Length: 388
Image (cartoon, rainbow, N blue to C red; front, side, top):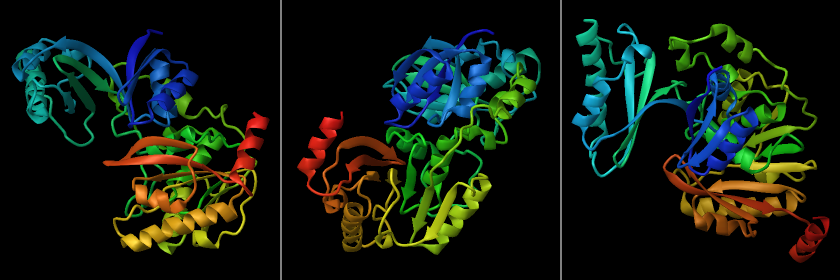
C-alpha cells in the first residue's frame, strides 16, 4: 500500500508521548514539532492512527506545500489545485486556518479567500458550487502558515479526537480526554498496579486509565471519521480495524474514583457506563480526607480544583489537606497532580520528583510527581538508589 506523510496534532507537552505512540503503531520517519508529530505510513496506518492514538487531537494528510505572502497568492495557488481529487462539487467542506506569520494578519480572511478558491474552481470547471458547512463538513480542510510557507492538508479525523464518544454527561470543567490520556502515559501508567483518582469529577482519568490498562483503542466509540467521505475510503478495512480485539489485555488490579460531590459521581457513573467499563471502575461519594489506606502497588493521578469557584483560603486549605492525606494515606504511591497555582503546590508541603509544563485549556499548568514514602526522605532516597 502506498506510503504517505501524515501529521498528528496534539497538545503542548504531549509531543514526545505521541511520537512514542506512533512508533509503537508502526509509523516511520517520525519527526517531532510544535504540538505536532509528522510520520509516514500507508492508509491502514492512517486509519489506525485515528482509532488507536490516545494523545492525538487530529490526523492531517498534507496535500500541497507552497510559499505565499498574502491571501491573494494563496487564492491563486489553490485555484489551480485539482480539487476533484479530494472533493466533489456536491460535498460540503470547511477550511480551518492556523497562522504563525508576520505576512498574514487575519486568519479568518485567509480562510475566506481559500474557500473562494475552492468554490471558484468548481464553478468554472463544472458549474457546480460545493457548500461551506462550518459544523461537521463532509470534507474538512486545514491550512497551516508558518512565515511564508503554507501547507494545505486534508483532515482525516473530522471532530477532534478528544471527543471519544463515551462521554454522555459532564461536570462544569471536564478534563480533556487527550490531556487525561497524556497525563497517564507521562505518569507511566500501563495497568500494572491499582489506580486511584480521589477527586475524579466526571471520571475522565478513570476511563482513560481503564482503556490503557485493557489496551482498548479510544476511537472505537466514535461514530464517524472524516476519511469515510474520501474517494478512496475502504469500509471493509475500517470495519476490520474497529472490531479487532486481539490487542486487548487482562487487568488484575482496581481502578477507584471518589469525589465529595454526589452529582460528580452520578455524572461519572453515566460516563463509565457509556464506555462499558463499569466492571473495572469503582466509584464512591467520599471526601479524599476520609481515605485512610490505599492498596499496593498503586498510582494516584488527579486534577484538583484550581480556584475559579472556591474561595482562596478554602482552596489553600484543600491542598494542605491533600498533602497531609497523601503523606499518611498513600505510602508507597507515586502521586501525580495537575495544577497551575504555585501557592497551591506549596500547600502540599511535599517535594516533587518531576515537574512537567502542560496546558489545560488556556491555563499554563504543571504536572508534578510526588513520591510518597513512610519515614524519612533521606532513607527513602538511599533505598531507591540501592534498588536502582
